[in-house]
Amino acid sequence: MSTSRKTKPARRLIVGMTGASGSIYGIRILERLRAIGGWETHLVVSDAGVLNAYQEYGMDRKALHQLADVTHNVRDIGATIASGSFLTAGMVIAPCSMKTLAAVAHAMADNLITRASDVILKERRRLVLITREAPLNLAHIRNMEAVTLMGGIIFPPVPAFYSGGKTIDDLVNHTVGRVLDLFDVEHESIKRWAGVTGPEQNGNKKRK
Image 1 (spheres, rainbow, N blue to C red):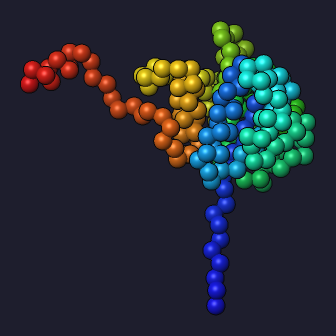
Image 2 (image 1 turned 45 degrees about the horizontal axis):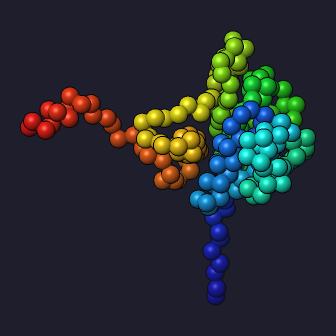
Image 3 (image 1 turned 180 degrees about the horizontal axis):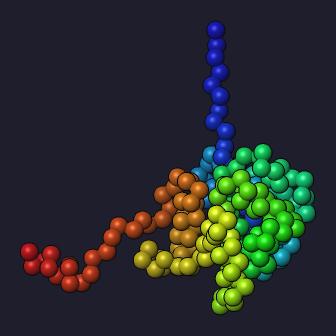
C-alpha cells in the first residue's frame, strides 16, 4: 500500500506598492522571498506605484508583476486578498505613501491595497507600512499613531549604519531583512547586532 506525503503549503504574504519614493523596497522584498522559497507573494501596485517604479528603476507593470507569484488589480475589490477567510501571514506596503497611510488609518478601503490592509488589521494579522516622507506634518504623525494603535507597524526605512553598509544597496538590503524578520521569514541576509565595544574598552582589554 503506497502513501503520499502532503507538501507543506507556502506561506502567503501580500505586498502593496504605492506612489512614494522607494519602490526598491517592494521590489527587493519580492526578490528575496522568491529566492528564499516557501512563500507565495500576492502583489498589488497602484497606478502611482507603477509610475514611481518606472521613474526610479525603469520597470513597468509587467516587469513588477513578474516578480510575484500572484498579482491583483488595485481596483479589484472582489479579489481573494479582500477577504479575511483568505489566510496570509500579513501584508507589507513598500513603499507606503502618506495618502495610503491616511486611507489605512481611517479605514477608507477605497481600493484593493487599503481594503486588504483593513482586512489584515481586523483579523489581527501583521501589517507593516514602509512609510516614505520627510519632514512629517502633524496629520502624518497622527495617522501613524492611529495605525499603531490598531496594531500596525510603522517602519520608516531608516539606514542602520552599524551594519557597515558601503552602498545604497547594502542599506536597502538591511531594511528589507529587518522587515522580513517581522514576518518570521528565515534568512541570513543581514548583519545582526552583536554588541559594541568602545575604544576605551578595547584599550583596557589590550592592557590585560
